[in-house]
Image 1 (cartoon, helix red, strand yellow):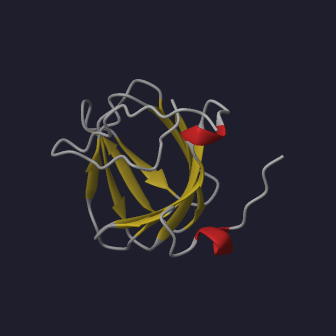
Image 2 (cartoon, one colour):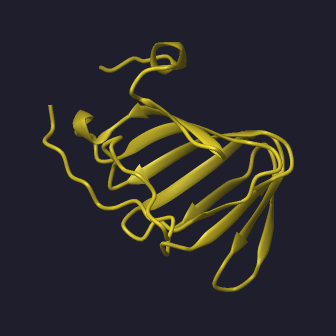
Image 3 (cartoon, helix red, strand yellow):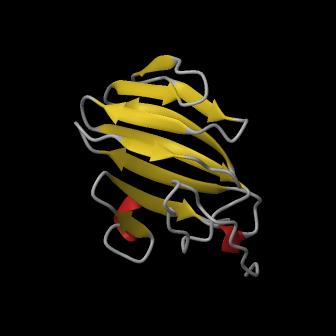
Length: 131
């Protein structure tokens, strides 16, 4: 059994910060469970374009409001607490938080925690031996 708190992760190597967002990596590939779980904070007034070409991501909004745009179709969806979006087709997307958004993100395959978004917003597929 693995039990972790966000307090244990805060300001460690599992707490990744950027100009537009902060991601606390709670479960990673090294745990060997087939997915990773993150708590992500998206900062109000920012615009972030992402494309998880190598991962499927599910995102559940817990606090805050904004919108997500499907780059391929131009379709825009409102984000608010209780909303889940699933990037099941490796969808290129743009997230525009109006207020600070906190969300829980699940990735498959799991991320290692060492990934960095490239110039296209893509995480490379990084593998790691399981503990």
